[in-house]
Image (cartoon, rainbow, N blue to C red; front, side, top):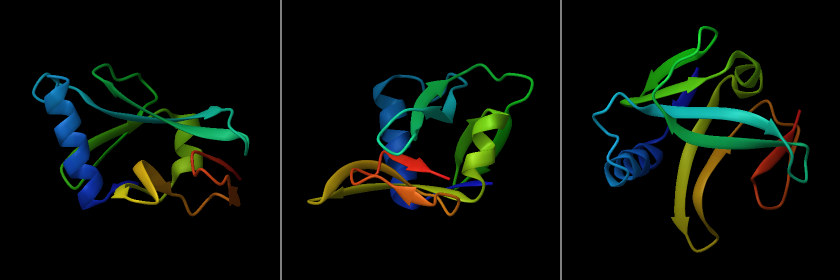
Length: 109
């Protein structure tokens, strides 16, 4: 399962409205790609095409889809959002990460 906090839900819904994709069958695609200072980085996109091996979840009213390979890194991860002074944006609370970089945008397992 991939979880979505209340703050992340609000921001995702707001961004979907701004992009005019809220009611067009789009969902939040979360993936893990190589790169970043710790080796792996998170990627967020809006998408409307599911692939055969995609893992599909719905939490807190947000449909989240990830490919099977990325899901192995994302099990029990929570997507959150911060608008505080120490950083603004989406971030992941990933119990599978053994270390993260200072900016919080990459991780290692």
